[in-house]
Image 1 (cartoon, rainbow, N blue to C red):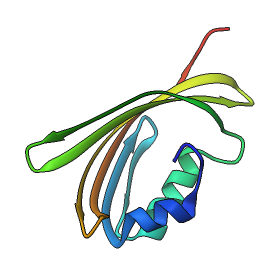
Image 2 (cartoon, rainbow, N blue to C red; image 1 turned 180 degrees about the vertical axis):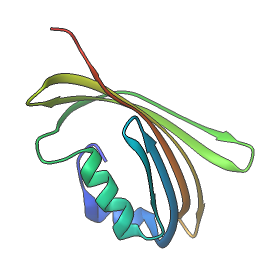
Image 3 (cartoon, one colour; image 1 turned 90 degrees about the vertical axis):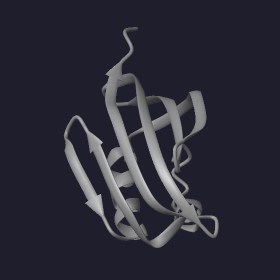
Image 4 (cartoon, rainbow, N blue to C red; image 1 turned 30 degrees about the vertical axis):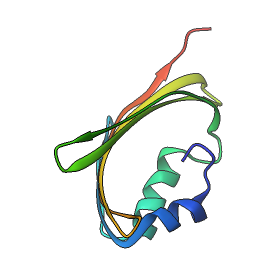
Length: 110
């Protein structure tokens, strides 16, 4: 996601992935890889420059995997931190079920 490499993301997602994502702006859902990529494109658009990945954590929780990450993002509004937690299931090296919670863009004073 940080590099906005949609083709690589498409390879990771099952074509019929079950997706739900929650941000401060609301809930997004999709049943397809293309739909998930559209959501990610809305979350990080062309004006958002991911300058760095400040943190990545990975773990398992019961029968699902969890990954948490924090990006430093610059856009016309300034510098921000964006943190997300993702829970997922996979089969044949593709994500089949994905839930993402985003804390939103948090301004970094500067």
